[in-house]
Image (cartoon, rainbow, N blue to C red; front, side, top):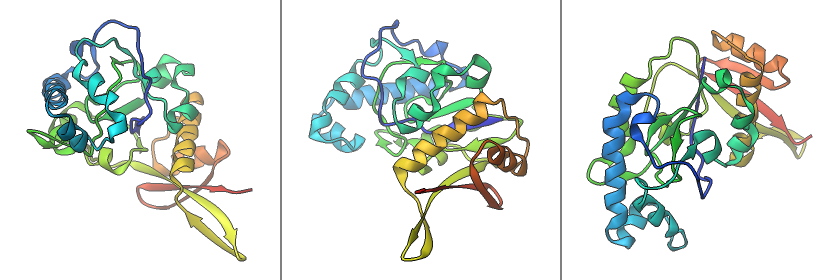
Length: 246
């Protein structure tokens, strides 16, 4: 079983490891595309500042990301399990899981394609939704290489956001989180981004920490229920996890 995750916008701002070594990253078949995207990002950030900010979707207050991107080849690295600091990763707590559990995690990235939890890379800024000159949409750039690099044999649990899901598509079980509350006597459900990320992180941690090896959507839904989650599995390819205000 593999668990597919997006990266997080929040990242550690500093590292103290050696400099980047693309050849050391898992799934070396991705190295040529990693090299291409890395150099394109560096070239963009060494060019006109206004253009780089616009392409990357950054504000004037985020200029420091351009400086980090310019120096990626020389920058010190840290493990991906320590790099990402967003809400999902706060609840997943990858560092507390053993090697076997971490090996089931695949982190998608606009810059690296995918990373394993123990791959070492520097802090960076590049979302999958960016159209990076000269190649264009990153999801399209990565799709052929990821199709070759990723050939899972078991169940795939997909917790990615839409831009990252576009980079690699195959039969999987998505996890949709809905908040349930009573409004004027009626039960209403809605998607709340922050709570959804936190819940996905908790679900991923529970599956990994308990060594769950579900083979089907039904087995996954049953396991999550036994782990204390409120689950509905009434659509092929999607499990809905319900959280309430209680």
